Length: 157
Image 1 (cartoon, rainbow, N blue to C red):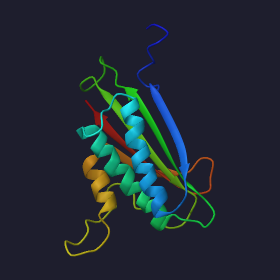
Image 2 (cartoon, rainbow, N blue to C red; image 1 turned 180 degrees about the vertical axis):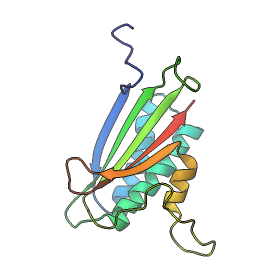
Image 3 (cartoon, rainbow, N blue to C red; image 1 turned 180 degrees about the horizontal axis):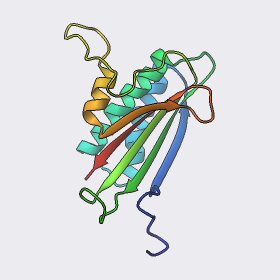
Image 4 (cartoon, helix red, strand yellow; image 1 turned 120 degrees about the vertical axis):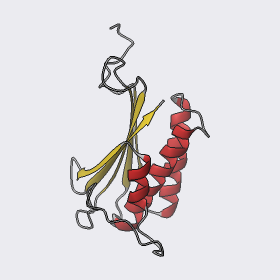
């Protein structure tokens, strides 16, 4: 492997930004992620870009709605890595999305624990969308704490 090709498990690109825990902060996070992906070669309007925007939008809205601590921001981190072409599955790219907030209580359910929302419910579909759109997702403690991080991975072609 030459010096310019990252190892398949190392990110080819990484990005991190904090946003105010407000609806405007959540909207800015979604727009900035789409712009960042464009810079990394994931064009605006493609399935990968649109899916990432939806996932970030849902997770950022959850961070603002359920994870808000007055005076503290939420953080969005992205890592784009190339999948090992010799490993399992097809060659491609994996986008890892992490959204962290500083509230320790109000932890979302883990994958498999989340109940399907009622068809008439006004809320509760965010994590169901993340589960449907992402290849994998989980909740972990924020490092360094306090708080939690929701991690979602998308398989990009």
